[in-house]
Length: 418
Picture 1 (cartoon, rainbow, N blue to C red):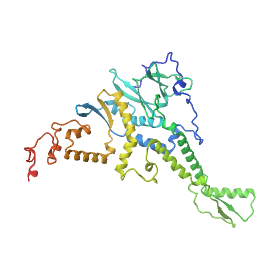
Picture 2: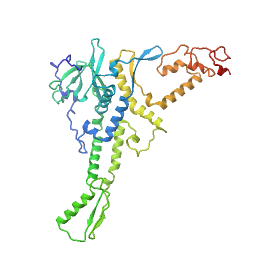
Picture 3: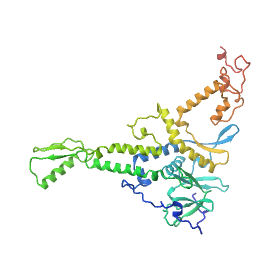
Picture 4: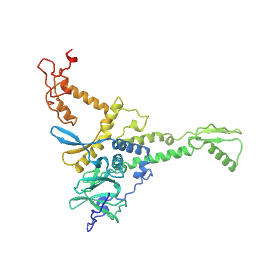
C-alpha cells in the first residue's frame, strides 16, 4: 500500500522554488512559431508519440532477469516478487512503460519504494515527475513530493507537499548537466523544433480543410452582382472544400472558365518542411529516419538483422543500461544485478556471437569456460582446458579427456569410429 506516513514535513527549511529551479522557473513555453509546447501537446505530434512509444513499448516488454556474481562469472537467480509484480495496480509491463515514458518526456523518472519491516523493497510505485523535485540541503539529497499539486516560483513546498528521503525514492535521470539534480527534459530542449512541427501540422489541416488545393479564379462573361457571386462561390466551396472533394472535376456553365493560380512556394514546400521536422524529432530520440518516414532509405546495415542491431545499440541500449544500473545499485544487494534480456531483439547477432565463439574454440585461443564467462554463464568442470580442433566432443562435453594423444576421444560413438 502506498503510504507516506513516515514522511517528515518541512519545519524550518527556508528554500523556495526559485532556489531549486533557478531563474527559468515558470518560463513561458510559447515558441517562436507560436505554438505552446508542453509534454501533453508534444505527444499530439505523431513523430514525438511514435518515438516515445517505440522505445517505451520495446523495453517494457523485454523479460527481466537477476544475476548473482560467482567465481568466474554470473549465475541467474530467482527474481524478487516486486520485480515481476511491482504493485497491486500494475503489471511489470505497465510499470516499466511508465518509467520509460517519464524519462523520455521529462528526462526524469521517480519511483516510490515501499519497504517491508526488514528494509527490503516490497512494492514500487512510479510517480508523476512534475510532482517531484530533488534538492540538496545540509549535504543530503531529499525530494519534495507535491502529490500532483503544481510548484510555485516562491514556494517549493505547496500545501500538502511532503519530503521524501533518498531511501524512499529511486531517481533515474537522463541527460544531466554537471551540478544539476534533475535531468533535462527532451521536450523542453527541443521545444522550438516540436513547436514548428505542431505549427506545420495545424497548417496542413487548415490547408486541406479549406480546400486550398484548388487554387484559381472563375471568370464569367455574364455580369453578376455581389449576391450572385457569393452564391457561386458558396456552391463552388461546397463541391470542392475538404480532402474528399479537393480533386473532384469541375463543371462550369454559361461560358465560365477556370484560371489556375500557381501555388506559392511556401505552401508547395510545406510537405518537405514536415519531413524535416520528423527528422529532427528522430534525431532527438536517435530513431533512424526510415522508421519515421517510409520514403527515407535506410543506410543502417544491409538487412533487417543489421538494422535491428543498430537500433538496439544506438537507441535502446543507453536507456536499458541507465535503468538497469539504477535499479541494481539501489534495490539489490551487493553482487546482484538485474538485466533486460535483449537477445529476443538480437537473434541474428546472437548467432554471429556464437559463431565467433566457435572460431575461438577451434582456433584454440578460447576455452569453454572463457566463452561461458562472456555469456555470463557459470564455469564447468574441465572447461578450462584448451579444446583441440579434432576433439569436437569436448566442446559439448568438457571434462572428458581423450583416450590418448593420437587416438579418438574416450567417449567417441560407434558412428564416429566407422
